[in-house]
Length: 251
Length: 350
Ligand SMILES: Cc1cc2nc3c(=O)[nH]c(=O)nc-3n(C[C@H](O)[C@H](O)[C@H](O)COP(=O)(O)OP(=O)(O)OC[C@H]3O[C@@H](n4cnc5c(N)ncnc54)[C@H](O)[C@@H]3O)c2cc1C
Ligand code: SF4
Ligand code: SF4
Ligand code: SF4
Image (cartoon, rainbow over all chains, first blue to last red; front, top):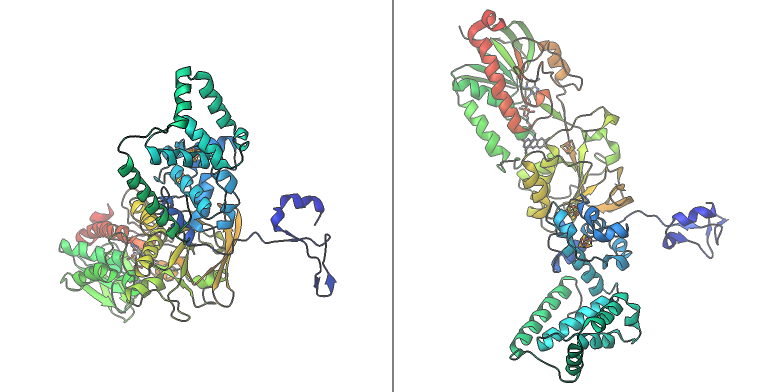
């Protein structure tokens, strides 16, 4: 095969053999590149059920592949590789490798729900995207995104104290990210912090600073916290069980 | 004086015509070549029917019982028409046993022939025992035997239903859509999932034609309630790896070739013109349409007219039809045929 056409093949499908002789012909090395077949050779039947077991994935089996979601999608408009219709199909048929290949785009859904409005079968693709991102994470295909760290810190604080203190959220986020400089690589976060600093009245900033020292709490919150924690544990255990993962771990 | 109406074919269309005529005290003679009445649903042992979910043996069996017990209907099974002469109002039919039947008019309700899957050898029927037809699956269900691979009796993990086998295919001169096989396949898929929840069912389609009210119940229902999966692909080839069947084609929605193992492959066979149609056309002097079904003269006046005055057609004899439509057409043909039978040649011809 002429070398230039190799660019059309996915690199992981190109194979070169260090030492291979077939019927007396030496086919080793660069000049005898093999191409792995693209054929789908099996369906993973568990996959649709796994996604359907996670919150938001329940209606995935209704999809009839009309493409309305993709066509309506905010993110698809800027990145044509972002294609909820396609991923839903891969999940329904259990083409796992294919789905995992897009793991770094799937989480980019902005939850605008334009797809949900467009879908004629009430699949709620936005929720399916959430369930899929969650699945990728639970299965260990992706690291936690900065936004996930942020969400988790935010939620943890609400659960813990029944309150939100912006300063604490940011501080906690830095801690969760491990690397103190990493958050500054997240433009949205930089915008948020400078936004607060610019617009907030002095009194508010002082209050925020104080909150870092004296942690305010909602009075009588403890029973609510217990209830929420219990619920989260239950859901997490259920999700992990549905995916055939060991019970521990999670958030 | 009123002559009887000759009805050829004792399937849903013929039974319905006889029943309709009897309801207004019009006599008929029903000729059926097999040894019992009921047509395809009974002769081929269909299971639960679309859209009623009634067992064919109950639903069509009920029609048979009503006809057999009716004094206005003379049933002649194991018989065919060998010659047909005369004109509207005074036809004479000569049957295979040599007897003659006088009739004022005639209705051809001779139905269809199941497509023989051997004519699509690339899809493995006749080569691999676990490649079967929808008719065979209907029989597995109606006999109570359950869904089992014919080769070794195991319950299949995975079943593929291939749509449009013997329909919509220029290669083999069959340009028509057989109308009912999408819905029947969705129905069968649901029945398989109910009988054996461990079995996964995949339907390979080009288009889904669960027309009208069948959409929600069968197409949506099979996905939403029974998790049946639909893959847009026309299968190129069914082979075997020695253990399981291999279904090859292109999944057109992901632009990928597929080569997937299955335990059982089901052909959704179409409705061919009755193999007797050339003979029937010669005997009754009626024209066939370009696909080989008995031709209809018009679409908007008397629905049932053939090219020969006094001879009418109903049901799948004139093209792929559902049972409901065959029954309705049986009634329509009865109405048209009755005019000739009651008033004789002159009035009717005018
Ligand atoms: C697998 C399968 C499943 C189906 N399931 C459904 C379903 O669930 N619901 C539905 O609505 N439809 C269904 N159909 C379609 C249904 O079978 C037809 O609509 C129906 O059988 C048509 O009735 P008919 O009376 O016109 O013809 P037929 O049922 O074909 O009856 C014709 C009769 O005429 C007889 N005959 C033929 N030639 C001669 C001759 N020369 N002389 C004398 N007698 C003759 C035959 O022996 C037969 O008894 C299904 C079809 C298939 C292939
Ligand atoms: S919710 Fe997500 S998938 Fe749906 S349209 Fe918005 S960005 Fe696209
Ligand atoms: S809009 Fe709904 S039915 Fe259509 S492809 Fe998207 S999820 Fe599937
Ligand atoms: S009804 Fe469906 S399976 Fe049957 S011929 Fe038409 S499209 Fe094909």
